[in-house]
Length: 355
Image (cartoon, rainbow, N blue to C red; front, side, top):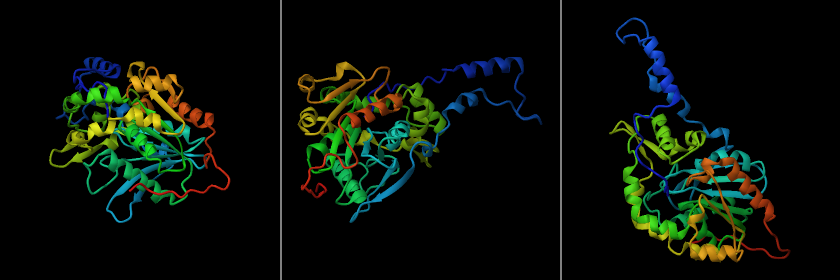
């Protein structure tokens, strides 16, 4: 879940383009809207050009709907790459699979990428959009993997950001995915996350709630501090919104404020679960102060690799996509994770989805 500054965007803030346009208007006053000549373009339009939505097709190769048997649940996934292990990406609360778009354009050169819209997010459609319990989301991941790969899944590297990092850890801790070859958890630590929960409703309510256009929403996400990379915001923000016909504006797709009953379950006991997973592990953090006691001890004992990424906010994969992609590729290479993972001759294990 987003934990960066979510204060409202000051309307009076102007960028350089706005100021230049204002100076130009002083020299050449805008023509009246009632005259026969076309009116001068409003000053705000030039600044909105750089916030125009960017299509996902420049980063992923295709998108698919994954239908879950014996249910009305349909999960949307974005896919890229043709060889290597599958980097299976799980986004944070309020984000979408397109949160990994910019980094995917580099990762797909060395591995396959699947980015899933979790329940209640993006283009995914489920019977209960508000059931964001970690158990339900884990079952969703197993169901999608089963539907996509059957009983012979390729080597999987789980990558989870924030809430998605918690889901990744819980999936790995169940030890029900024999082809799981590695896990990368992005900027989520039990101690910090648990301490922040008491502030989350206030943070969510302090966000700007309505947007007249996609461009305004993208602009707010960047200027408000939740994202620092404009291009990533142009790709990812549109799928986090939906148009409300009654209000005639865009609102958030995910009603996070109505899922509070599940928040504690995302993070409680997360550190011990993370350390117990018998696979190569990488923890990416945006700050060194986020390690709790269990992780500090585990890191000193060499139980996992940790990298602190500088000059980034909470969404590391969006703010610094090239560095994030390099870290993922190096993790795969260092641990010699191939398309079939580590294979033991004579041993065959059947993939069973978690019930």
